[in-house]
Image (tube, rainbow, N blue to C red; front, top):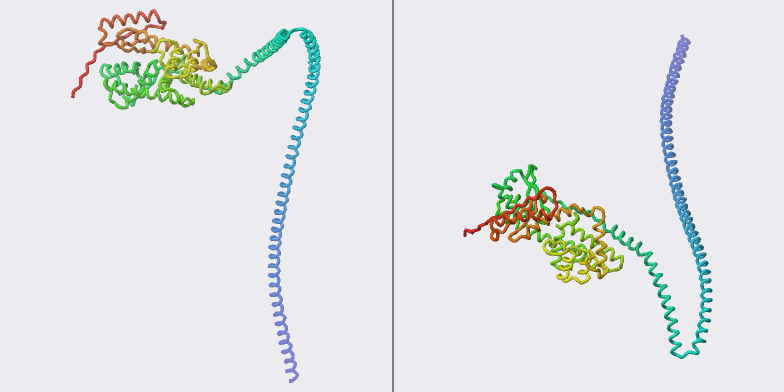
Length: 519
């Protein structure tokens, strides 16, 4: 039985040993599997790190390639700029060489011309030497002849010969200079005139015969007209213009050919409209104030024009008369603008001819000053202007230039000629003048002049574009029957002396005015 137990014990021991071995083998297998899993995880991490390192390496490689490429491009651009600059220097050197070659060719041509000139002069010198030898032989012959003369006879013969030679040379020189002057005078004069015209560009001036005054409302028109038209009659009488109140909304038209009267009336009417008090006494007061302001404006205008031309030393009397030219036109051209333009032209021409520029501008500015007062003084405007300048202390050269600018008197200096040229340029340039307007204004002036020649006439105003002549009579000098006679005589004289379309209405006004003051 013991052996049975022994076998059983062995078998049990073997089984247990087998179980132990199996358990140990399973434990080792699981351990190996765990190590394998850990190894696979490490391998995966290693692969990821390898990929990350590879990508970083690729990025660094790309950055390096880009930097090297950019540096290479900059270097290539620098080399291109250097090559371009070198090409520019080469082209500049080529241009310099071309210019030098051209200069060399020019110098060679010049030297060739000089050689020809020298050769020609050599021939002329040889001819002159030959002539000199002949003259010497002639002089020797003369000396041999003179040797038998007395001292006085010989002196007389020599002087006659010398005078003859000098006369021939002088005549030849004079003829040559005259011929040269004649060839160049016309072209030089044209050049001077063209240069002066180009440097003095001025717009043409035009003169309007009407001005407008804006009204705040159409109700103001009734106040301007006044009860039974007394305000508008008082205004027209005080200003000498025609006031047109029509259906045009918000506007009253001031019409008159005299620019000073028209501007005075426009300013006065504007003041009355602004003030609102419109009645005959107020109208006369405002018109009187405006006339004083216009006189100040006229003097300031004359002073400003003189200063603009550098002529600030004009006599005050001439400055005031000069400013009136702003309100005078000649063939549609503003006379003050024309005078300033002539002064500028005279200054430019004087500078080219090396004359006194200030004196030339002075005579140019004052040449038409007589037109400012020719309506009140007998005579032509050059004569009137010369008298004004002489009385104001101007130099004789200025007085003569004014009097001679229409060739009424002989020109005594070049400045008179400059004024004639400048006046012709300013007046004859395209668009400067319109003769029809000048004739129209002269007709209106003549209408007023005819009426003013009669005794007892205080004022005369041509209105309605010359279709009506309004004559203001002196009530203390004329009776009503005298006014009827004078009105008829004025109309008859207008028919005989003037040519005009349609008819001219002559209206003569005589009124008595009585003034008392309550104190």
